Length: 557
Image (cartoon, rainbow, N blue to C red; front, side, top):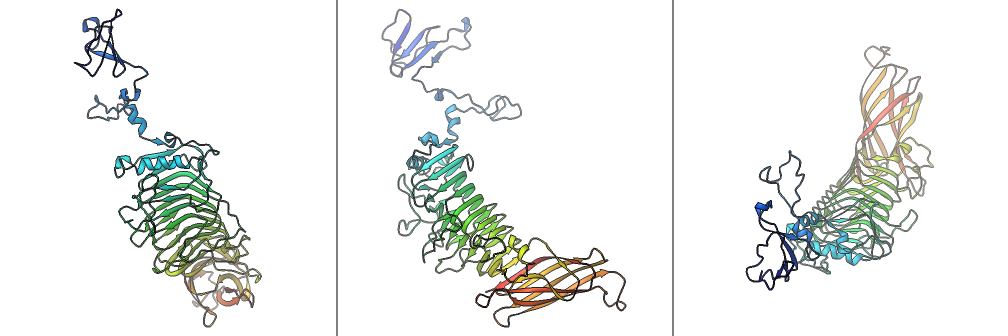
């Protein structure tokens, strides 16, 4: 520091970055660096008791305290954790670095006030963190953007680029309320610039490739609300991304119009819309976990090039249709394919819960369906199938349908039995159902099965009687010819044991049950609805319980 003068109270002043720089100050002597606005005091000598010779900096309003603090060490007092190369040299970090580990949306001026629009500020935060030209492509820039609890008034579409991680405090805690019509959130590719999103559409950006498409996006723990007939989350040409713990809601209700899907266009008013540019730039290998979708005309909609997407632990409620794939698809009949919906619930769905017009190897597994396909009525008023998959290779595995238990044993012809599943698919039934066989010298109805298509039913069963020593295990096969002879064929293979009271030695038991089947029209002459009535003839003086499980159901359009 070049000294200009020595004051009477022994305060030196000068420029820190001129001459020889900061001098050694005497004990208790002050020094003021005019150019950097910094204040120092001399430590004193060792003989005076100073721990070290030198100068100590005195903090002023011109200092950045974050740049001075480098004392943070993770659990420094825990003797069981060593963060540095040795126990005596822990890794230390500055307070600034520590606070920058997580970015809050508030750092960009976004406030949670439902009366103040903050869409532009929210988008600026996303753009600056993930597509800033100075940092784009740098893994260190792929930080976590935390959205604090509150209701955010979003007045524009939010565009989500590759590697974005946006996490709220939880559904019903962090709420993004979209107030303008149009898609509310949409994934975009890496060619996006701040303020200029690049959409994966040929008409907009034909330069999109597998290498720059939307990918590795995380969106978690928040609610998305819209009341303008808009689509919710538009997952566009996106791969390897995770959408978790979301609630996506709108204002559609049972009885409202379900907008038709225009040829060559995607469905409108859809909770999650899946879309792809081409067979190469497709929507693939994404996970949708624990998502609630309510009050949309369509819960999930997608067309071609939608593959290997997994919906699990989701809840679809109060929708026109639940999931619809391939409704206006041109060309490739094998897509959408390899998509799976599992361990989810569908409740209050006006039409089909799952409709796959075109596409193969899609699965519905372990899902629960309640009040689906009834047009708002109760389970007795079945109007439409619950699952319809038209291409060969799709499956319904261990799904539960609430209408099954009611209509399987309801033989009132005023209550028609529209099939739970329809199309060209295979079905297995995961749960066991029990019916009762009463004493009857002539064939009596015990179970009803839909028979609208050519199909076969393979049924494993177990029978027992509480009053008699009798058990039977067996397999029933029903073959329905709907388009030709309008008949049903039945075969029964079984083993049984019971009382030693035989009609003739070693031939068969006195107490026996015989099965037969009848092909019946449960509808009207104008609108026929065909069913198979499984019948039984029993010589028991007490009811026999028939416990069965559908292990294989093949359907052909």
